[in-house]
Amino acid sequence: ICGVSIALVSIQLVFGKRFPWLPKKLRGVSISRTRYIRVAERVRPWTRRIDRLVKPRLQWLVEGAASRVVGLLFVALALCMPPLEILPFAAAAPGGGIALTSLGLAGRDGLWVVIGLIPAAVGAWLIYGLVA
Image (cartoon, rainbow, N blue to C red; front, side, top):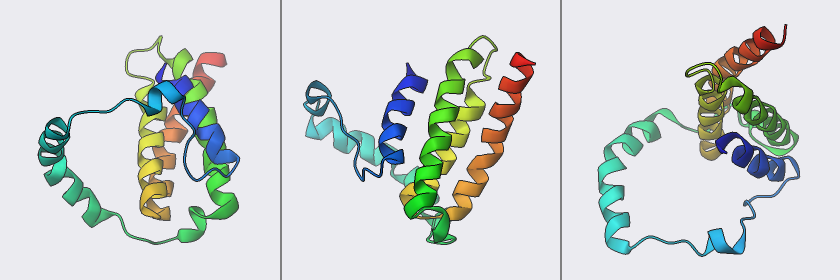
């Protein structure tokens, strides 16, 4: 389910959408303000650490056509996830690549896009090993 969901959102990135389209039912989902504040307070130390690591650099990797290529990569990695579920924790490789690369896209940091390619390559190697 995770891989297919990522692929559906990534296809929208390929077509240049700045914000993902979500079904009306999913857009209507909300959480209470108190729960949101409680969760935000718990993750704040982590987000502050991450914010120190992410800064605008190598922006040509996160803008225009490059972001669409990254979207294609996301679609490919996301579609690799379901077959990798047969091996314990193998789907974590493409998932980690997507997570790190997404951090780069969100922070406009091309270095994180490059770092995200490492686990993505491991995921591609695992798929190749299953097919070959």
